[in-house]
Amino acid sequence: MRGNFSYIAIYIFIILFISFARNGNCESDNYDPIKGKKYFERGIKFFEKKKYEDALLDFEASYKYRPHWKIKYNIALCHYELGNYLDSAKFIDEFMEEGKGKINEEEKNQANSLIEKLKLKLGAIIFEGRNEQGKISIVIDGKEFEGKIKTGKEIYILPGIHRIIAKSEGKILIDEQVIITAGESKKMDIPEMKSESSMPEDLNKGGNNKKSKHSYPKELKWKILGWTFVGVASAVVVCGIVTAGLTVKENSLMKDAESDYMKYYNEPWITDEELKGIIKRRDEHYEKSRTFLFTTIGLAVTGAIMGASSALILLIPAREKKEKQITFRPEILIAPSSISFNLSW
Image (cartoon, rainbow, N blue to C red; front, top):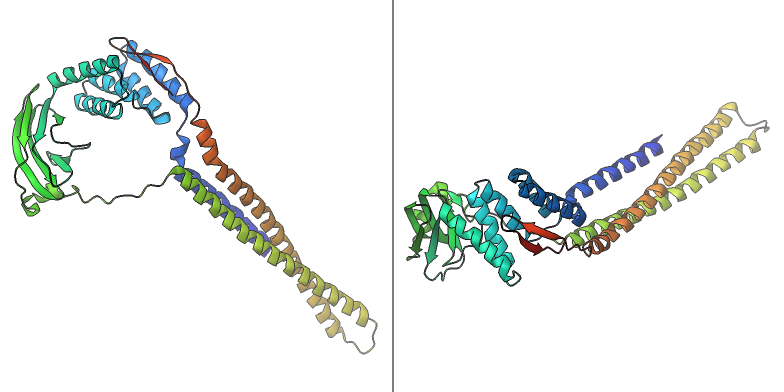
């Protein structure tokens, strides 16, 4: 019974470990260019029917399965039509930034047309001056601005009254309250640095104190997982060899006890108690040999399963690399002005 429990416990451990590994690496399962193409084309149809919320959901799903910078233009258009002007500005900015050097004139004109429309709905702040202290961090109304900040670049905000704080490497550069109207671009010069201690506590929280997280390539993660399985499988095989040896040993001791019983059974000088002791010893060795035998079988099966699993896991990076070579070049229409983009899937 103890042997049965031991390899059952090992099976449960393997199932839980594989389940955890799959959940921990689910991000790699998201890549599916065929699904991405399907959602993208359906999003185009929704957009043409002016079903902007449905179109936005499909474009976001398309980007999830096949991240491509051109899809961000479609997402920006949907946000604009839904009145989410800040979100629209964010995605069109990412589209222009990631597509730098790759956008043709027709696409650039279309994107600039959307930017001009956004400028009429939003206000903008432009930071000027030299930033010798390094990267600028912007806090607007207590919330840190997400995105790349460069001097001379427009940062879009909703019309109204806002508190703007700019800092670099923990030092205050600007701390002002400004009024922005729709269509207005306000320039703000970077002055001499102030002490970090002058910054309000509520605005200083979470500014630059975020701990950086190390990220590793997915291929490396799969290799680490695969070789971990190889190591565990090897340890299981070694344990199986040990238990196999113990099985042989106990079986031999059982046969010796059986031989002693047959040898001394008819001897007149042997007592019943001594014969019972020999039988008891034989039965004990028999139970131990059975326990070790079942344990050996369980470990052998476990080792085989983990060995096969490790081989499959180590093949995953090659499979993903092959999938990424799948390409589609659908003809798509970017409403509302029927600009045709060729999107390489």
